[in-house]
Image (cartoon, rainbow, N blue to C red; front, side, top):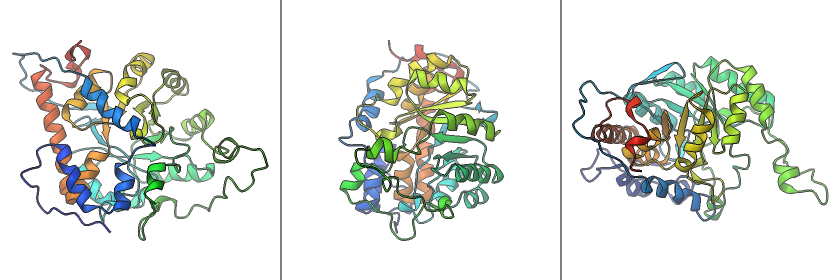
Length: 367
């Protein structure tokens, strides 16, 4: 099991990227393959970062910034800042306490945490261990009855929103992990699925000439009909994660979805997708402010958060950065990553003349 290498924050950690080598030192090759890789040749993974780097800030001086803050309301929930912990599976790969350690960091920094279906700690146990606001990320299961069971468990445990990931119907085919021989070690499993009946192999009943993808792996993949059914099933705010297309955004609106996460799954599913930040403006135009947008993918600096909000997001989700902190220094490291990002974000707000989140707009980016 992983052991954080740090018991205090060293002076040479000044930004989020400084945590990455410490995290690598703490993790074996197996856990690192799961955390740090992207799909195929990692083109989408790298594009997420390159696109942020290409955007330039437009400074504004001498603004009266007294009383400035980062507070917002999202789906009727008051938040201290627009930085959420993205859902990350199997967190006991990175720290002995897994999601419990992450929830401790979220509570300390007043952050909302999105808990994965594939968490290595049961969702109820996480809810009992923290006062941090929790949302539940749902992978729709082949057994739709069990999918309903997961939603009911999240509601009963007090989760405040349902985030349905829609862009990874073939998430088991991560070739970077396969190249590294990735496997779940003893003591790490999908705790929320322990009592789910074992599904039959989707390839077991294929007939000659049938496609192993379309007739096998995708035979029970989610469709828009599943989203409509979930909308009827829950009163929780319903958010779809993995939207890049304006057409898909409009379809989600038509079904009564409450919010969208513009995301390419951190570059983990397919190469040559657009960077999430590049897809954001078109999706924002499609929804025209009718529902909130969040952005996930590539955020490593406070300026990245600012750029996402300038192009139409209300908040952002961060994944790998806080996991690097968790792996390196446990809850202290994850909390420190959040602290760094929030303080960097506030500095960028100040230097671009923004006292509140509503002041951030496209005019704060260089044309």
